[in-house]
Length: 280
Image (cartoon, rainbow, N blue to C red; front, side, top):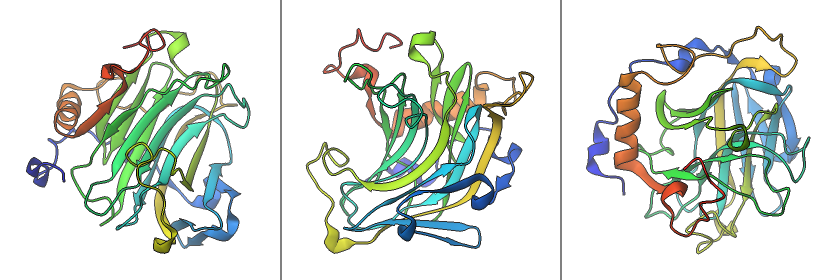
């Protein structure tokens, strides 16, 4: 399991981007996308689930060109191999086969191992049949099945920052237009069967004797610039020190997470074709 150092958690990032963005009710910001019979809204909490019949997903009412996008999520304990619970940005429906995507995906697991949180960025997706993922995977310094925790993506024209409970865990800067998503995206969440790859590269599959597999979401946050917002719209900042970058305190917290909990980095994978990922 996670190292014992996790008992006290990461050093404080000293800044709370989530506190700058108000919570929206699910119905104010989202709608069901698929699997409506596997989706239940109870006051402010959304529950979605996967069984042998179907999973479920939801989608924001509007597309965005930048912003802070987050939710508090609680994951299913026990055997969840093959199951993915996600919160992500995408324009796949608008640009099939050539889409952009920014992902937070929880890769299901077996009871003796911790969940893996996968972050990923796609740029103009799979137009040539090859999806070039930019995966960084983490274990967490807490058990994400015990309580709700806040997960978020900040995306602006200069950078993408992934946050867990306001702690930055990954920063993906815009080094060139070719390696950065710039087209408007919608916000999605889903639970689905990804047995072919989700758990130890497909070694363990979804086992429906443990169904239903449940994901719970609340405290939805959509703060930023919708695609049709005026040019003067500015998305929320990730840091107290200006519109771009992280403060020294935030960088220290991120370095702590990456030192202790990073379990995969695409940039250091010798199996990858590094001509395809020049930002590394």
